[in-house]
Length: 369
Ligand SMILES: [Zn+2]
Image: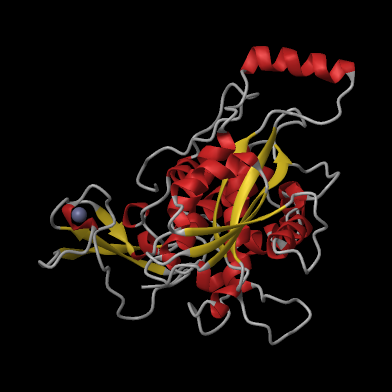
């Protein structure tokens, strides 16, 4: 069913694309639809076939099943994807591609949503990971008064990104008197983050990565908020704790997550240290992390200096070869066909709230959900 722009000859719609229709999920009894004319797409003058579902009467076209459905410039998607994971910020991408910055924002959001579904869909039915490292990668949104963790779980043997979410933190560390006063004012206006945010995020992460009955190894640093959620799974987890202060070299058992941190900061402009392109919103940072994780797992090779190095997905036995961006973007994934964790649902629907911002644009549920 996969295609980027143009379906192959003889392609037939596999199910009704209307999420509210009985035939949205493939059913054993026969779904009926009929041909409903065609139109010529302006961007490339191609004829697009239309159909009508005989159950819900909604019309749709071959494009409804393409990852670039309803897009004026379909080829832009792949270019934006590549530039996002190769260290360009959104404004630079807009200048480079000579389009409006708002277009790049919009494309990045779409790509982020697609990548969340792609990550989840690909993991369905694969063997559970046996050795997992997780850690909180510290960054911030809006300003340095709003630090947060991207909590990331990586498979130790393959570098495969299994899951991520985020937790808001209170600004800590060395501050001047002026900064302390400012923090007090801001907290009075916008409230304080949940002091147990990390614990909650780790609870969700564990429920996502543990899906077998055999005990697994979990490697973390000595953060106190990890203890309680891990204790819940005491029969299923061997917990290996490495002091957070220990030198993180290749001999450290948290090395792989450090590598992830280094390489993500190198590849994603919003996480580069001392950058002026930091994420204004945690929501946007999570969308970009989804894109980055797809690239890390399926497209990019594991070891940069070895050209024959496999991708993490190949190491896991999920793929026999590297995917291209076009492969990843070929074929729309429908959100109601995928079961997302709570935090990923929030990322998908744009529900992550940035304290310092009063009005935020959410992704509205429409045909193009
Ligand atoms: Zn229908």
